[in-house]
Length: 89
Image 1 (cartoon, one colour):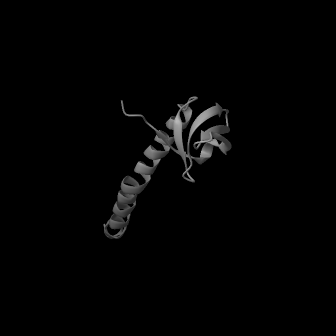
Image 2 (image 1 turned 90 degrees about the vertical axis):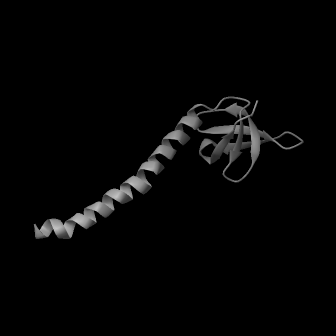
Image 3 (image 1 turned 135 degrees about the vertical axis):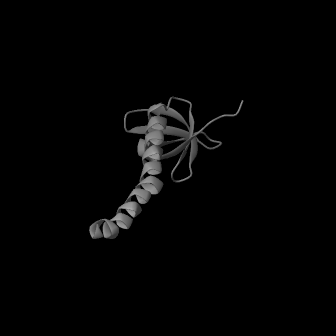
């Protein structure tokens, strides 16, 4: 019984830590992976560096974005995507 009293609070802290920190992070990673899988040509995205552009070429690990008023094309790794811009209609 003494062991339960000593270990019980520690186990409770571990469970709370898992529920509050690890589960939401796992869900975010799953959503991010689904967003990457769903990317298509002409989708507008924001990179982790803040570049906003339209996808003009899409490969397995990299893509080419068209950005700016002069339609500059820049090659990025797919892992550099922060989010997809969803158009409001």
